[in-house]
Image 1 (cartoon, helix red, strand yellow):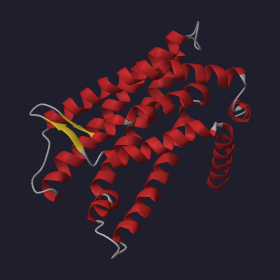
Image 2 (cartoon, rainbow, N blue to C red):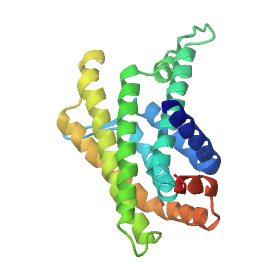
Image 3 (cartoon, rainbow, N blue to C red):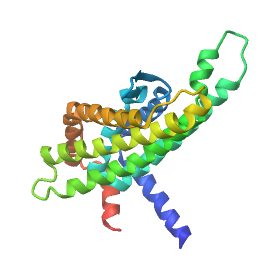
Length: 244
């Protein structure tokens, strides 16, 4: 029973990977990798707010998830999110191996520090992203189902994208900040830390910023999903899901 279930899921994922246009998957995976690297730098730290570099690219991840969820459903988006995390972990492993290989050609201390990574940042970003991805995708799908008259209209796409992105980004930023800057940073970074208030404000500011980005770029996402439907993109996967 379990074996047949696993085979079924593997087959479904293979069909999904054949169905989703590679550009969207590539942008999604690259954005997840970049988020992990940019999160190493704090861009702003005031008494009431702090922001890390991941905020510069995380909007792209959520836009890709919204596009995939709209056309293929939340399960498909969750599966691609897990794939992105696996690729990110593999990339981090390769970066780490490169950073610990000694070289006498020059001083690569800065390179090693950046690409060698920090294990608790990777832990925080992985946990936060997976949690936020599931919340974002499910909320996006549930909200979309409420628009029964025009489920494929601009208003439906906008509302489901804006609300789910805000909620998902808040969860992502807050969980990441708590794990990295409240739990581990004081131990491993000579007392450097953020307060819970800073984490909450970071999460709120990040969520607002990402929604503004979503507002700016959602017309592109809407046009993509519209074209996908017109061109019957992913027909094989969608039909296989209907037969389940």
